Image 1 (tube, one colour):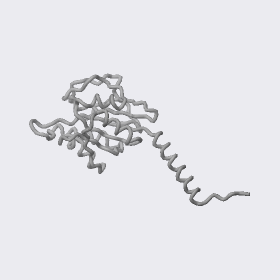
Image 2 (cartoon, one colour; image 1 turned 180 degrees about the vertical axis):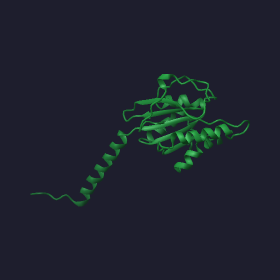
Image 3 (cartoon, rainbow, N blue to C red; image 1 turned 60 degrees about the horizontal axis):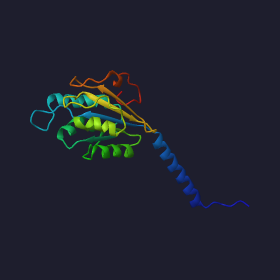
Image 4 (cartoon, rainbow, N blue to C red; image 1 turned 90 degrees about the vertical axis):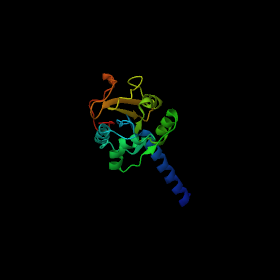
Length: 193
């Protein structure tokens, strides 16, 4: 004799299967994180200089085709101005972060699986943030004059992290990117292409 399975039982099986597939899909995805220093600041005020405004446009041009989903900025006005062209284009309201580097990295890794995230940070927190996200840092520290470096991290479903760097906009840096860390040949699906 064949036993009939009630409708609710079938529905629960289907829902469980769909949830399993959605979690499996999230685990199989990679997370792309771009990290940049605030653009150049005007002297004596919390606003971008003309050069900084040009850099904000250069950042927009560098990432406009990369489908950025989330933008994090520091509480500084220059941080908001750095992402303004991209945030306006992508219709994203930037989120302000003030957590410790370790806690912030944990938030990114847990809450944005399969997403594309841009972080505008202070120069002295970028290298620690890359380390906290699991990336290998190309050098020990940044200088506050390093404004043209775009760090591209890909966090794979395995937990492995690839970290590359590229220049964007007009040249304005103190530290040279080591040749081994420069992302030169960009292709579809690679952050910062």
